[in-house]
Amino acid sequence: MSCSSPDEIPADFHRIGLLTRRSGQPVQVPFRARLLKPTALAEVQDIHQEALRRLPEPGLVRADSEAFFAHHFSGEGRTLGVFAEDRLIAYGILGLPAGPDYRYDRFLEDLGLPAGEWPRMAQLIGVAVRPEWRGNSLHRRLCEWRLELAHTVHRWQIAAVSAPGNPCSWRNLLAAGLRVKGIKLLGGQQLRYLLHADLRGAPPLDSAGAVTVEVSAMTEQRRLLATGYWGYAAVVAQNVPQLRYARPLPP
Ligand SMILES: CC(C)(COP(=O)(O)OP(=O)(O)OC[C@H]1O[C@@H](n2cnc3c(N)ncnc32)[C@H](O)[C@@H]1OP(=O)(O)O)[C@@H](O)C(=O)NCCC(=O)NCCS
Image 1 (cartoon, rainbow, N blue to C red):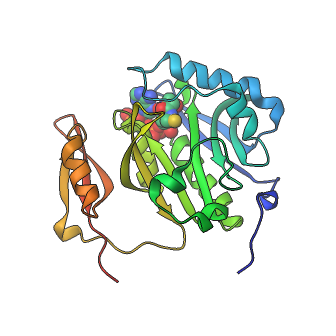
Image 2: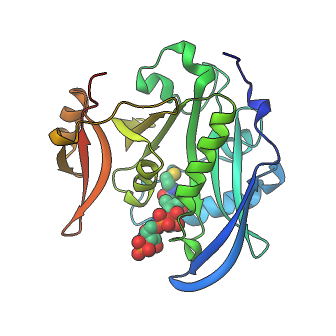
Image 3: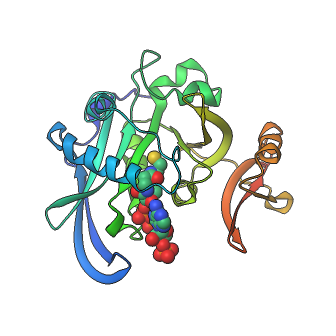
């Protein structure tokens, strides 16, 4: 198997589509998604800051530094941007760690993957949509496009984290095929689901043995995860967010 480097990410990657909602109202506005250059740093940070200001509770999204964003335009990452009406309206960061010296999220270690998998890791490590454009499935699409990019450079091991209290985030990660495989404290204090997918394939889940747990029931979820269950589907019952867990079937 050949070993591709992050340099082979296609620089001309782009996607077009139609936005159908703005601030909840029906519209028809075309969008274009493409890889961003470092000159987009200020606009990306502006979207990030706006998202932080509007969080329903602090800690649901990590406040990332200018250095973090600057680091992921080339080399150990790429940043996808979505443009509409000549303005950046969303971004999604793909982390492509070169190896153990990578100075940001270390999901390989969190997932217990062997160190030999560093060149196979791709991390979905930051995303936000400007509030008026939410509800157009841009996050799900940004996840799918980043998985496509990861696939082109043979980075099969996809990892991400998402706050249990941020279902708008983890629902889209589940929809893109990631599964909750752990719970971690980001930066030692921010509670996060740890999600993972292997793009080479995953065993089917034993849905007959599935259990549904309230997202707030952390002890129960930790117990399920410790006994080999994966979180795979969002359920909402009487306005209470829940997560369905099942074990992968033996090969
Ligand atoms: C997570 C996020 C990117 C999802 O945006 P999106 O792709 O536009 O969301 P979706 O299209 O999946 O929205 C699905 C529904 O949730 C609603 N929704 C999306 N984000 C929402 C939010 N932050 N608060 C309340 N409702 C939200 C949408 O309006 C839509 O409603 P509908 O079902 O009534 O149509 C967006 O909420 C966001 O930018 N949040 C702040 C940053 C963040 O949380 N990032 C993830 C962790 S790093």
